[in-house]
Image (tube, rainbow, N blue to C red):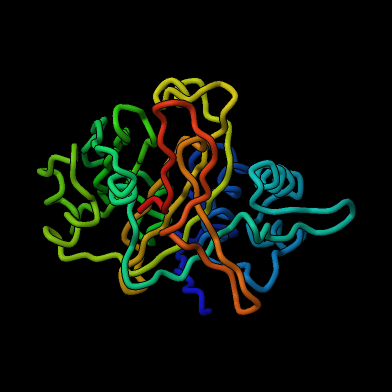
Length: 281
């Protein structure tokens, strides 16, 4: 199975590797390394501390802080006395089939009414996100934030960024009950053909837990998606999903490992609660 690699481009070149200039240096390095992980740059091996310190023109202490943060999020691993390596089970690279399965479709396939509460729909600049999309830091971006409901219960919160140069028509759309990808294709002529996702279990913040009505003992799934159209990055999305209501099923053979969006692992649910199987799209 061939895995598509999304090209990655840094915003600008300064002394060492280009960085955003936002926040402490170790956090800038960490953000850049995460973007490069998503772009598949370290498929052949993750560089050591010394090499990273030279590449970023930073101290080894700074590099260690960045790597410590990546390890705490499960993005890289390191055994005692050994260099860091990419945490392969955490970085999920999926070859898309003939159709992208969406959360919108998965909810309705489970027999639930899907709707969204649109919290924000505006144009803004975000240097970190623009860099991930291979754009200049000051590029205007359409930002859509939605609370996704399955039935009357919160399921996920979506934060999506698209280049305003082509996505501006979406500012007039009512996303209460419609698929973003359908509107992207209908109004903007842009269809997603693939991409990459980083999926990990996280503990929601107090604000996120309130928004999702997340039980205190339940974790959430964080999905960072770089969506592409014919190999060109067009969408950056961060989604937080209630882990007690959503699952992803994978199949593996000697030839490779991939997700099966049409099947889910179900478990006994509380009365009135429905489990959703599929992928967020």
